Length: 513
Image (cartoon, rainbow, N blue to C red; front, side, top):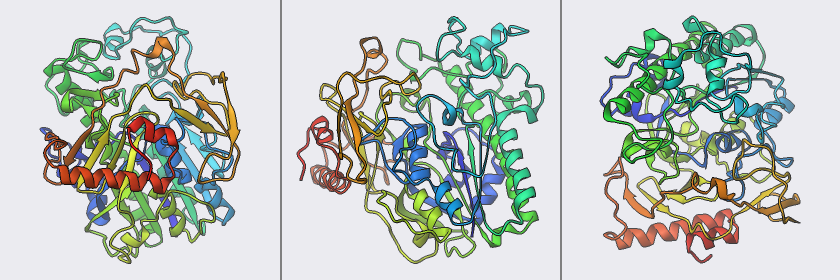
């Protein structure tokens, strides 16, 4: 069985017709629609570790890390899916424009593939350094460039330099990624067995599109410097850097939608190759995302330090398997991002001999089981912890004064993962992780004073009945004591099953079972 795994970053399920598209825009995604019409659509699929790279460690290694570790590299004790596949005779290829794979603190995600390709230039990719040939002040304003020195980190000027050469639609990132994937299938479809991973950073911000796409869902002047393409994370309704008016929020949503339509068009080229070479008969295809993205919902923009609502957490998962009994149907069983790992390995006939948190979804796809998990945990390292049973979501805000420890075989920067690695002041070593015998470092993740304002959180402890309140507008914390007790107990069961570290309980104000 061949495997094609496609992740589309920041893909909001409520922008997709396959999930009802309950929004104000009629977003055109004909290729995702045709894939969903053919495959099995999962309705209760949830994130795990957030955001980008922590999610990918779940996809590619089967480890749910957010209770123990921040954004970081593949660990020495991990068994990446590409390594397992290659050792079992699979030709493996990785195609991405997700520059974080090659950035500070997140190495090791591509090195096990037989072949890999990085399309350069997205977001803050450290690529072009030459001065802008034609400084476009309106465009820089749309990018929310703050005038920082060129050598400053997290400098949005980098994106303007990276994309100055873009002239045609094919020059943009999604067209390049999916064209490369289609060309690889054209050249490699005759292999006895292969695994192709396509990690598209779009529809991630900046929401910068070719003009013909940018104008699809808005009447605004798409080059108006007051219309943002790269909004700042935070609350759009409060005074501050993230504040936007209704027109600006609507414009951001239109540009996200435009980028999604662009992604969809070129994603279709991969589907065309599957049709052309009749690969549907011997290939499993998985399409999902790492998380959603706030686009004004509940007043938030981006992935800010606020409650992890379903806008971020309840993500698309669409799976084709040639023997799938749920093809052209929906699956209501609960699933989690970490389950992708075991699903791919089982489809390739590869057993898992080490401990992971991943549970194969293949029994659901093949009609051999009605459920594979009773709960899904999710969250950011050191932040709130969230749990769902598919009917309710329970969110527990952290005590930010309690300590947080990072566990890894390497020194990392657990507070600012994309900045250079820190050497901790105090370090312990031991076999602290319940899922490996490897010795790891344990050190406190301390927020520097200069970062504390940035890390100010807006988490709340809350309970929602998401099957009746999909947008999580009605907090039942004080009105459904029975359900609250049940979800608290479920969280304790989940933490015990995961063998969460003691400090997690302390931060949540809970006592271990």
